[in-house]
Image 1 (cartoon, one colour):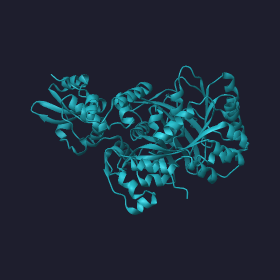
Image 2 (tube, rainbow, N blue to C red):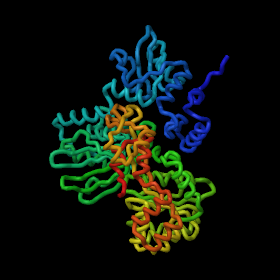
Image 3 (tube, helix red, strand yellow):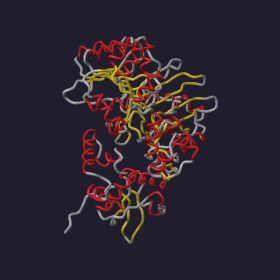
Length: 572
């Protein structure tokens, strides 16, 4: 009798997964605490759909694509929405006395026992991927968080209640439990709860609540793009702002000055931090809440999306004993994620790592992180000076924003430390000019900096609704793609589905420009040559500019030409 293969063996047999890839994914899973399946998907070795199909084959169950499935209301009523969401299961059809349900894990005995006990009938299953099941739950139960937020706002708009005052609920300072508000709670409490829940479900990085003369606008930044939600009437403005300020432990009576705070919250099994910023505007206080999800920072260098050549180069840089490695790019370009990935790689018991950050966004186990506090004189230069007395091997300086900080970082690198930092420049060669403009002597730049990496984030084509397409000649010309390259490449576009909120894109991937400080580059920097001259020399030595790395990802079917052109242009 042939031995039954598990899903890994089935994927291997189908030629979709190698033993080396499984080992690499297992290493990532062990390092980050995620499941092996999630690690395989993150590394893009196999898709969620391929894993689900292999699991179905392993347990001799039928795989079902939930995108086109319509479930009868009578069947839906058999399992409540809360049970469906909690257990990631949706009823599909009745076959005699047996209820067929769709699950992601047919070996989850606990779920089947729970359903048998609740329904007092036999349960059998079909298999689909988890994200498709959750999408089907949102669609069929008609109570996804998107709809509930809009309906809640409409319901509150229709009432005549005046929400101008809100009492401190006594939960400031504590971890907020989101998703537990009941009908007995104040409407504003439920609305704030719902806004945060919806934002997290939609993978939002920032929540923007902005008052205007006739309304309070709510916008979410999803994959780098702002999406407007239902507006709130201005009569709820004071109560809404007060509720969020209470959660962030801010002074609700202070309306003239800027304020910064933090909300710690638990949503399901996720522990999240919200970094809150309040500024006074012409029509009231505007609040922006940055959602910090620890899962987003648990990435390895492999996951960042380097080309094979750049990966080897960057890996060689971070294993150097000393020198400065700079990461450049605008706000929101993923610099922190790249630096933390490098620190995760270096974070071993035999290395001491200290960071100076403004503020500390994510907490890394095993790393000494210092938060900058300008109000008490604890600035970057003061922290770096004290850091060196702690005998670290690796130092991370949040940003080189002035001459004093840059000089301290350079001194640290020259005394045998590996220093990571960020700089706000448009490209990698521009970082050299920026340091010199700050007042750092060129000879110090050339003797300390060992590598500079610029990066941007492009949205990835949604894996659920992507379709092959053929670009027009005009598009190919604009992207500088030759006919030969186009013939070898694979082009995809997203049609728009539940999974990507009808945008055609889901998730983001970085594009890179890695400049190594070779002897030729050092010579040009020492002479004070301009950025274009340094860029040309770096390209002649193998550096791929941001645009070229973006087009490489277009040809691999990861993103689209429009996305790359949006964030990077080829320098003529």
